[in-house]
Image 1 (cartoon, helix red, strand yellow):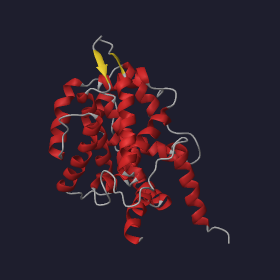
Image 2 (image 1 turned 120 degrees about the vertical axis):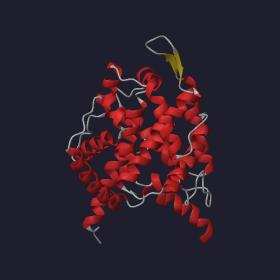
Image 3 (image 1 turned 60 degrees about the vertical axis):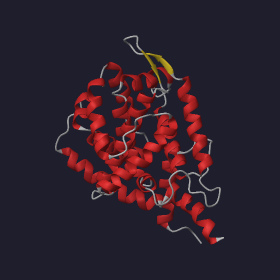
Length: 295
């Protein structure tokens, strides 16, 4: 019997998303071992927040824009990555890491953490002013982590759960702080209030220069393709809109009245993509956990 038209549409969307965020030859194991809840488990805020593709995509772009305002974070991209030639690889690796550490079993999450730590150990150099930097520096890891989780949660609150309580936000930050510490970060903020205080104290240490503008311009180029381009244009505008006002100013972004149109467009796309993607990694992981109780 031929597949129903809506099933065909779902498969096209799923293939399109996988072409950007697929594992590139490596399959993240979300299916075994049966019953293993991993680092967080189905009742965690991490499972809830990271399950929404649209908010994670938008938050991920905002996170990169925020992270690159730190001179050492930008230097790591500039000196040691192929981001300027292949930005999709960076986005893909980040998406894989979040999916694997959130929804994978414990051993799979620990494997991914060990791999990232090994990469960080090899990334070091000098800033333009001659001072040294290391990707494994606990302070730098703290900045990268906070910029990421703050952006993820900001997107989730705006487009998925605007009434998320402070307690639920604190739970998310607390859960994710544990992951940052496994990567080597120290003194990681664990509540919404601590995150805001930390961002405020970091502002004097951030800057935007010619290298920042070059990397940002590459990041903000919309994806090509019939399906990729419309979504990526709106997601990019929505990501800029997610930045703290001071972060947007540092990048030279000007927010006008069109941001309300952007929010409406992304909200519409999010509803469509939730239908098309139908659970994704979270659904696979939940089957793994639930099988322990059905066997």
